[in-house]
Image 1: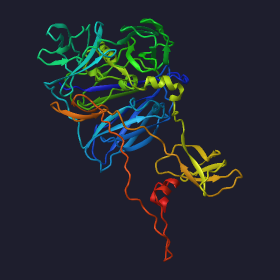
Image 2: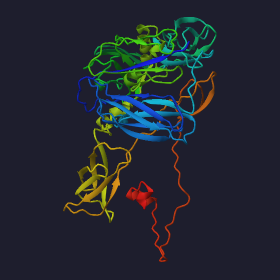
Image 3: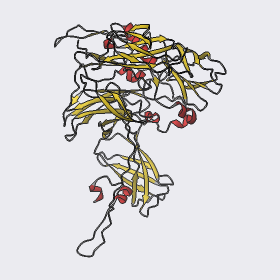
Length: 579
């Protein structure tokens, strides 16, 4: 059976709440590519929505975002600064150069505010250049199982929850019965995976006993070994009330209890000597991360809590077979004014992230299990149950809690960009900074003038209107006495996040393949169904030969030599500027 994936993006304008200084909120981006495969010389249309889904806020703080195209070798091929002043909506076009080799490429997007917390929460979408994503077609025979233990490692003598995902070798979810068995071959319990391939098991592991999952066909998947010591934190969320409990060894008094959600931010609670209790939040969030840390703030155990999922999601009425020209019937929920709806029909086999996942969940949390697609659910109840199981397996990723507890308000190194601002220094010809004064910038194309004050150390920050690529400014410095003179201008280079934590995609194959992955712990083997990040150490390259300035001569002409140091000093960008 061929599946057609349909994703719905819904945004509702709400009231705005001022940002708290220590709530560690961020912005989220839904990213959409209008094409999945392109040819060299084509243009890739990109659009999306920037939001801040914290508390009762919807509109983003930022008026600009950055859209980048990244190669499979982690090289940034192009970067654009795009306006999202239209209530967070943006649209741009990226050019595919003719010299790009065939392969899988990626588009990612982020704002300056999102840079405060690393690149793990940046949305990333893949596309192919001269390479198509193979449709999945008929499912394969091999099975791959991914597992997640709620709360951390398996603990002996404690009730445990295990969430797992079952897929075939082509990535299609498999719905079938699974049996939990011990090393003696005794069946302890059984469960049937959903159409999205997800299932949740509850059992109490015993000391010195190994467990595995078994299928009717004889495949077996071993569970991790149980731990004889340790502790886990669990909880339930209802409205603004959290009921938490800690199981395992006695919890030392030096442990700390913290929560994070988009409504209340990071909050630390005094748990005393209790192993259970009740927390009352100021707001009623949808998802809460519950942390148990040591006295230094390092997370020992965490759980993702979620309120009862009661909202209904719209489902399309799709026949088993569709012909060209047929109509897809879609029933929408009641909408508020100025709502924006995106509906996208994606061919089978094209990797795409649902907008609900990127905005509500995957910007803050991650899971070893793939996010369940509603296309596999029979009903709204099945879709809510799949989402419930995925959230049980998820853990918080956007920032390191230990770092937040230590730095607090220092986490905000980058402020939201509300205007286009370029910064730099004004230097006199003798190399000293201009102490005070004024700087005037003339837009060479529109005859518009901008100005900014110059600080005592020569630095300036000038806000300008939006301008297009290729437009330029003429700068003219002015001393405190109002005299225009000859100055050099050093424009500060912007800093951008490194390329990391990108999930690799490749055309699907009909078999499992072994890979060697270089990770933080060294070289290790893994299978094709496990998505890994390749991290390489930084390499510093130094040229052996250094250029020597030519000696001036009086014969017919004079030699002017410009080396790298002088280019950086005067911020030469083109050969025309050097001349």
